[in-house]
Image 1 (tube, rainbow, N blue to C red):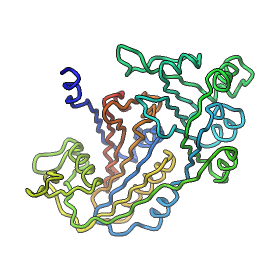
Image 2 (tube, helix red, strand yellow; image 1 turned 90 degrees about the vertical axis):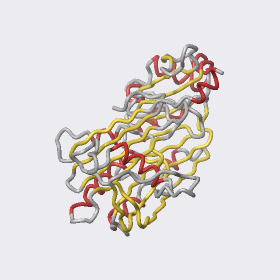
Image 3 (spheres, rainbow, N blue to C red; image 1 turned 60 degrees about the vertical axis):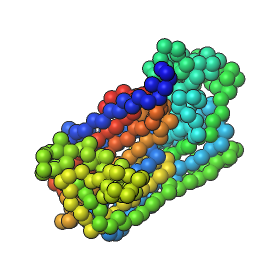
Image 4 (cartoon, rainbow, N blue to C red; image 1 turned 120 degrees about the horizontal axis):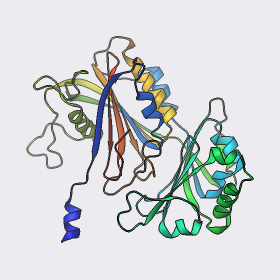
Length: 363
C-alpha cells in the first residue's frame, strides 16, 4: 500500500518567475541562458505573424551541427589534445546518450571545462575517484557525483592527480559511452570534430526544425508590469506557461464537451489572433546559439508590430546530470528543467524557470 501511495503522489515542482528589462544593467537574462548547458528543444511563438524575417530564419537554420559518437572511451575527454583543441577554444558540451540518470552511469562535459560523472555505487568504488553522494540518493546511497576540472588538470599533466584519473579511466575501470557533442568556436572549421574522432563511429547531425502557422489562436492577455496577473485585466505568468504547453502540444483550446483528449481552455482574459508563427528546434543546442536567437527576437520589435509579446522556450535533457551551472539534476517522475522568456514590445521581459522534484531551486 505504501508503494501504491507513493506512486499516486503528485511530485513536487518548482516554478520561479521574475520580470526585468533587457536594457537594465543588472538583468540576468544572458547569464541564465549561458549557464543552462544541455538543451534539446527550443521553441518560439510569435502572435500576429505569418512569415519569419530573413534574419531570424537564417539564424534558425544555423543552429547546428552537433555530433554523435558511438562507444567513445571516457579517457578521450581528458587527453591533452582534446582539452587544447576543444575545451580551451570556444564552447564544448558533451552528454551521454540514451542513459537514464536515475539508473545508469551518465557523464556531462560543461563549457567551463568541468566533467561531471553521475555513477552508481559499484562503478564509483571501482574507479577509485573522489566524489560525493548524490543528494537524491535517499537513506541508501546508490549514486555518487564526481566533478573533474579539465582546465585545472591541463596546467599540469604530469601531476599525480592527472595520472590517477587517467589510470582509472584507461586501466582500472575503462568506461565507454555513446556521446552527443557540440562545439562552438568562431572561425573554426565545422569538420574539426569529425576529423578528430575519425577513429570512432561519429555522425554529424543537424537539428530538426518544425515551422508552422497556427490560425485563430486564443491568446491570453498579458501586461508586462503584472507578473501575477490582474483580475479581468491580465493573465499571470503561471497561466501563460500552462497555455504555452498546450499550444506546443497542439492541443485544442476551446474545451468542447465532446473532446475527450483535452478539457483545457485558454485562460481569461484572452483575445483571438488571426495567425501565429510557431518554430521548434530539436537537437543538441548550445547556449551560445540560444543567446543569438534571443537577441534577434528582442530586435523583432525594432519596427512596430501587431504582437504585444513573443515567447522563447527552452527545455533541457531530462537525463542530464546538471540543470543550471553545476546544480545536480535528477529524474524521479519527470526530469524536467526548462525556462521561458516572454518578450514584450517595450523590452520588458518575464523569465520563468521550472524544475522537477529532484532539483534545487532554479538560480
